[in-house]
Image (tube, rainbow, N blue to C red; front, side, top):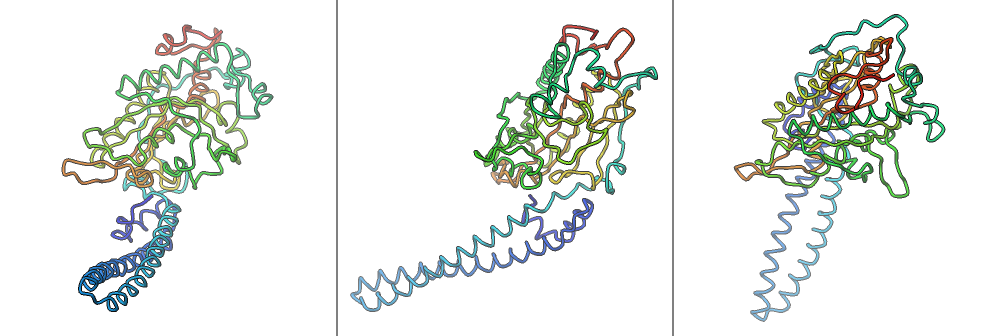
Length: 423
């Protein structure tokens, strides 16, 4: 969440930047400032009261020594009354602080100044394109038909076992999945990321720490009896490793990667955009996460973008990189770059990665901090990105590499699949 210091010192700037996300922050921010003023006034009153109690307590001791019991008892009774008043003030302080936090949890992160104006996907800015578009025959098949033709993925069997959005991978389809997972993990490790194998269920505190709760509660699978949530991305458990942690600046940047299954309810999704692997309830993904200093975090962002770009290049896929506009960004992000690969058979771009810098927004919720050389404690910056999500990568690989002889496997993947063709 936004820091109280930023809001109180930069009210107008915060409101203007939030407007780029089409969020009217005036009422919330003014309520926060009002509560903070009340909190400060109460704190001053409490501090003065505690100082008076301390002074009176010293007098009581001296009066008892002097044998002035009546005077001492009178001051002691006054002190007791003041202590009751201090308890009331402390309770008020707690209420003000809770009120501030409750409001701040509803306010999204402010976008970076480089985020373009816009209301939706049509306003995102293409910053880079790469790879070559395949010249497929007119009768090229979409991946769901290729999956059936070569017996790679059984969508109907997934419906039988679990429901729509839970495909069953078979034979070379399963091997292709495993090959991609290992390829992406090896590439991440070679780029200096420490591999983590986290749980795929998290508690509510972890969901709040990275901002999935309360903003995306309806999109998460919730095991209500145990009050645990299935993760929508490895970002949640991996970033929460650093919740309530104070790091040394020498440890930064921290670079972690993780392969997990991911679970998303995708409530309200329907139509052609969800067919086949285009939108699933359970899928595999490799995530990269960084914890960094504010001064270095945008260099880290550039390095993460370059890493994801290297992956799609090695997979020989046509791609483009988009800088998301304010209206298409997530609640917690300060700036986001999406990677899309082109599906020649579907004639559309498929999102396969989002790389984001959250600046101090998540870190403030997580209390993820570091100490610099000056020994001062300050908030870290957190970043994460998909490197990569498998379903649409698989879709694009199958569709763009189909030939009359079968489906060609990109050279970089052959050592992992153990085969060059799907036939």
